[in-house]
Amino acid sequence: MKHKPNITLLKDFHRGYPVIALHFDFNQEIINKVKNIQGATWSQSKKYWYFRKDSFNLSKLFEAINPIAYLDYSILNSNSREEHVEQKPKRVLKSMVKIPDEYLNMLDQKRYSENTKIIYLNYFGDYMRYFSNRILEEITTEEINAYILELIRTKNISASQQNQRINAIKYYYEKVLGNDKTIYNIERPKKSKILPNVLSTTEIKLMIDRTSNIKHKCIISILYSAGLRRSELINMKVTDILSDQMQIKIRNSKGNKDRYVGLSKHLLELLRVYYKEYKPQVWLIEGNKGGQYSGASILKVVKNSAIKAKIARQVTPHMLRHSFATHHLESGTDLRYIQEFLGHHSSKTTEIYTHVAKTDFGRFKNPLDEIYSDNNKK
Image 1 (cartoon, rainbow, N blue to C red):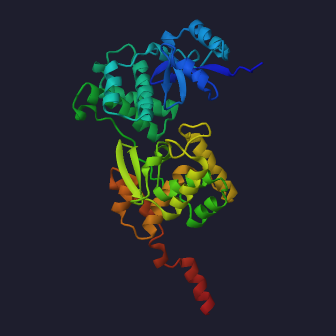
Image 2: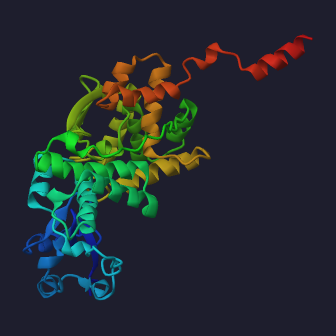
Image 3: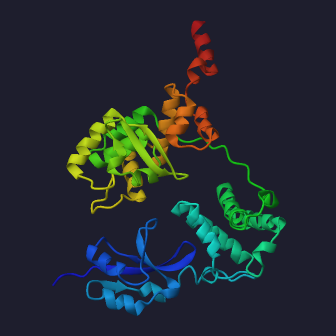
């Protein structure tokens, strides 16, 4: 008898709303069945099918799925994070907050990335819950500042999260309501001057050379040689490799901008071997069962390659992007070109690599070496 696959139902939040998510191994028969159920929606960002909780019908799902799969809905009967939210004065549960439609529509109209939408909706939802007994338009800047200060003191939120929460709040008043920006002059944290971690060219070569799988070798090579963000590689199509022009087209990157970077000759040779072996159909890097490669898989590939190269530090995909920029700067590439290669909106973002690159260190002798040099002369 054919063994039926399992589908596990889990509670989650998506775009600020509580949802019931379906988790199962790739199965085309299940996908075809689920997509025809009213209310079923595919989340590209979270990579699962889901139903809005307020319209979810367990009986209807069970009736449709039971012939082809087992349905594990035990988690629905247990307490989840939404039932465990502490009830404080002037607070309501996440499921009781409705983000204004105008806020949602404006995010879509401005074509914000799915990740940014999730951040804005979650943080603005927190803000609405805090002021649940107030009319939003009547909340003063001083009260908003006090709310952010309370989060800093009680939740110990980072400077980055503080900025994101402020942006989510300002978006409602300035973009949705169209109020003047100067009215909401919320205090911003000073940005920490943290220098990026970079790898040496020797370390990168070791990572590539000691990776035997050609797909994984291509992943590391293209992240480094094109200075890509992980999401940019995930969304890259086979047709974005322009071998005739020796360029790579990067579509819809951060800020919904396209850009071009040079295609490495060595990378092109690797990609040709990879293409013959794996024959990707749409996406340049595809999973074993087709479809886009996951961000978690790319992270795993990079970490494993670093281990094989015996690099003691924690290596991430973004370190390859940092290394790309730093090595370009060290080899004499103008900062303006590096800015274009990376797709940075502001040159100030790119200037951080001037503090990492070793362009000027060779001109100066270390005083410790000078001391021992003088001793040797004596």
